[in-house]
Image 1 (cartoon, rainbow, N blue to C red):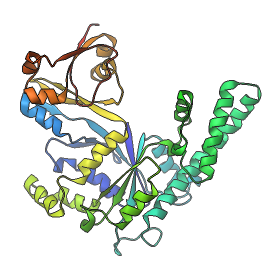
Image 2 (image 1 turned 90 degrees about the horizontal axis):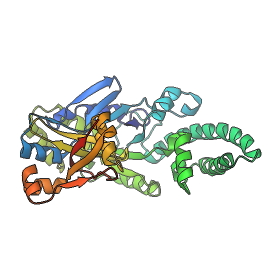
Image 3 (image 1 turned 45 degrees about the vertical axis):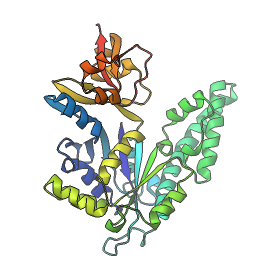
Length: 364
């Protein structure tokens, strides 16, 4: 599961990526490693992990991770292959969610590809290119489905009806995510179409240092524009964050943040937002050897969660011993949780909750 950073050239995408990639500067517990030049595995800052470490005092601590991709800047005409259009669209199609960076600061020294700062226009430029690509995909698929529908094929008829609605939305300049599936079948079909504009999106407004704590007028305009999109908007002084990560000590970084009126680096909040955007959540295992955060999909069952550790755990799943995170912290240890009768035994149907501390019983 990975989130792709997109935007026009010179809006701060690569600076943001480098900032996230330097997450080690925010806390020694959150290092970073590179898979490819433009793909990074970033550890998810989670204060709960630090608390469990404090209580258990393990030999090692392993945080959850999220994959972030730095995608080449898009230009007008990308849907027809302009610039790095084909590469851009190929890369974005492989991502599960989109972090859309918008320039929301004025600086005459940084050239804007369209001559002046206007995040609304910038957003529309990218939206149009993605919508045009999706329109091309839908029209090709629609042609085939219509032929099958004429023979009386019920599935093809349902597919045509859904695609007609998506096509209409795209022609009106709306993203495919605005088309609500009317039943489970439509939900599955939409996923099958693999459209770019159905991917969940997080808008990141790149502001200047003066707006790092409060945002600015540009941010408000973006919020107003996307209010019907069911998308999150956050603002971040990307250049300033990059400066903070260059500071040598944790104390210096904290002082800098306090001067800006921030409690933590915006990059930490962004990483957590990307994690949620991908519909991911965390459960923990806690023992003297290791305290570890495991990444699962929201809605996963106990056997599916066990399978993240090892496929044998899922195949031979017997039961899960579960402690709620708050109970673990309240009582301070697994033994005291058991004494208080707060350890639960859950079966195959149990839906794992974010923050559960779990131990699995299995037999292969």
